[in-house]
Image (cartoon, rainbow, N blue to C red; front, side, top):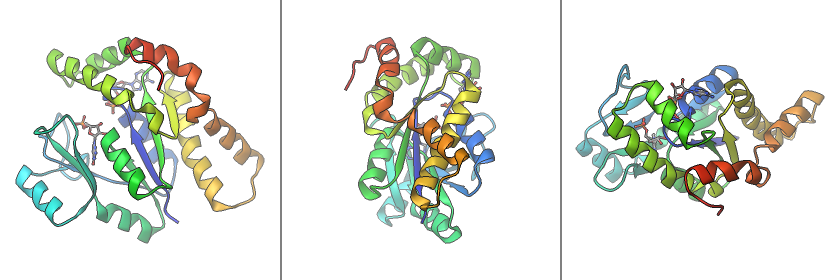
Length: 229
Ligand code: ADP
Ligand code: 5GP
């Protein structure tokens, strides 16, 4: 059976870095390339990071019910982003798991359609570090960085809707945590008897469960002037 993994994070948290590592390290992951109406940035290529299409083409795909989920990520009238249904079909045919990198609205739509989907929310260690990463990445103007930070607070408000929380502080630890979550969910659903390594993976993943992260979350939420849900 195909497992569906949904990963969300405020922009600049390190989601792309972590997702590309996980794709290298975990076999059998089918990655969904989203459709978007935003313009390509930097070295992005059509069909690799996104399929870049016009608003008209996107709305045509909506009419044809070609999306599993879609959203106007930065608010009404901004840009559309969507996951095509065909990626789920392809994953099922290849007996792979499906990995979706989508925003909180998209994650909620997936959860309502596929209740057994696993959701993971990636957080930066605090607001200051997020701002620094956005600056160091060098892709956005100062104005866009401020917009991304404001959007980050709104996204983080939704953390409690996710199954797992991953604080991307030390990168090697975060890579280990993410791969453990993916493998632990697979193990749990496979019904295969657990080895010593399997038990370690399950324990590592368990530490990122929402219920085990409340204490670690407090200072992060406070840095974004948010409180516990
Ligand atoms: P996102 O996909 O969430 O927008 P990126 O993966 O582009 O974020 O990461 C934003 C910046 O932060 C990049 O310059 C990346 O190299 C850096 N980065 C990612 N993870 C870490 C980490 N754990 N510690 C320090 N810098 C990181
Ligand atoms: P960016 O423009 O920085 O690449 O992405 C902005 C946001 O759009 C990110 O939070 C990313 O997860 C989200 N996103 C990318 N693809 C999709 C998608 O197909 N559906 C939804 N709902 N969000 C997406």
